[in-house]
Image: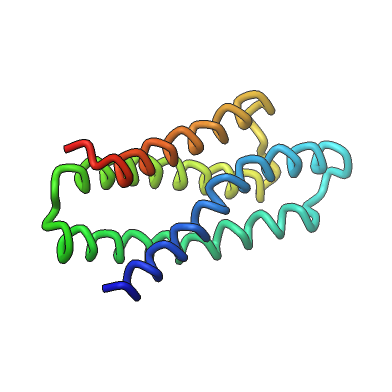
Length: 137
């Protein structure tokens, strides 16, 4: 099970890189698009980062479910963690919608919204870490 934990942690680390970076990259992409009015390397990088981390997210969730079932028998704290991960997954999917719209040149959200949106993921990550470390239930 140690290898499963290692795979889980590595995949979650990779996914979280994108969770934190892509909303911020959208701000810079939006500014670049306003300046040059075309799809550039920053957009390409943002899309590639999002796509790459999507597979890591899937592997992270699958290994997390496996661990929750096989080691912890879905203890109450794992259910809290899974609920928080589900909320983070919704945030990630929403980020994907923003990336798809940005690829079409649609930047509806303000820089302020995107900055706040980015910080929501940090709060979610802290809550997940709290559930794992403290195991409150």
